[in-house]
Image 1 (cartoon, each protein chain N blue to C red):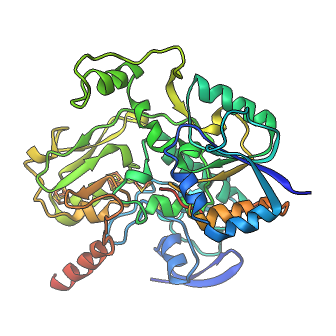
Image 2: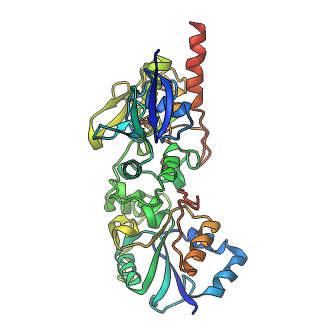
Image 3: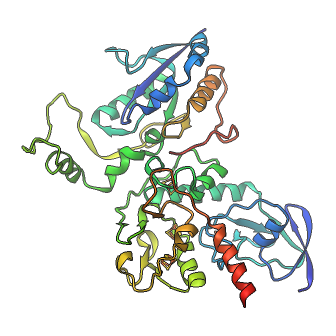
Length: 235
Length: 179
Ligand code: SF4
Ligand code: SF4
Ligand code: SF4
Ligand code: FES
């Protein structure tokens, strides 16, 4: 890969081409807020938190899905980016039902951490309070749609890493939902291997093992990236 | 001049007030700078004019609605204290269902009721609104303190800043917490 030069927040950086802005930031310890990104999965730019401004481009782009180009002038720290990041996190809270006080993920949730990172102290938009299903049909795991932020990390890990393809996405807009098989109870899935990878990949308290109580959830999402690396060694 | 401080408890569980009491001996610091002129254990009198009002809980009923409008007029600085006040939290979980269904679940179908299925409707009782609201969708809120409950440290920090005429900033003070 040819080596190119990019400028991130004024800092001159040499990097190989064909990598994303997020990868360059990570390699150079430049902080970037992410939620739908998980090492080991293909990035799809779903959460819109990893925003970047690129000179000459009018709209904000997602750093996880935008590849670097020679002499690209990139900013990750502008007020405009911060404003949109805060709005986005507020909308995550407003569009489903997040009651942290009774959530298994309380204190160990990537959505909470994103809220703290953007300085979210309250939500300026009306809460939608949708009626959401809680699927407890699986013998070990629960899928609680109240807390799902539609990052699709579960969908991608199940398809790309486990190869089972249990999870999918149904509908659009406010009605968008993660579904098991063809929108049937998870416990009746003919594709799920009960491997538990989606439990670890999920950044919130939406997917969790039945054996945990409020605030007791521990996840190990890094395991997914490690697994992918180990499998490469076997090939 | 000592400041006037008041606390009130709307649609909440009193947990934020318990957390306020957990500031322990630091209450003496507060008492040096302010008189607590109204709180849930002060009977009777209407909410007085104050410099700072700490409001726990969400707006769930006609009574809370009148009360928060009155408090807004009386308070120079209105603090939304805790997740219920800020984002309705547990008190808002009934918002996913029509009020009739919620009442029926509590008074008709609950295994613990007396079997008669009577819904309380005495004139002296508050009337529940169809939807529970966070404070900021009813009145202007000056300071927001999320947390269920906010820690005693956070509450003391907020009070101490306000009593010294500074605006607390939970984000830079790294004291933001939900749940
Ligand atoms: S998933 Fe996270 S943000 Fe949502 S209720 Fe649980 S702890 Fe709170
Ligand atoms: S447990 Fe494994 S196979 Fe089942 S849905 Fe989750 S990732 Fe897919
Ligand atoms: S269930 Fe979890 S991993 Fe799947 S889309 Fe929702 S938040 Fe993301
Ligand atoms: S991390 Fe890039 S869009 Fe979600």
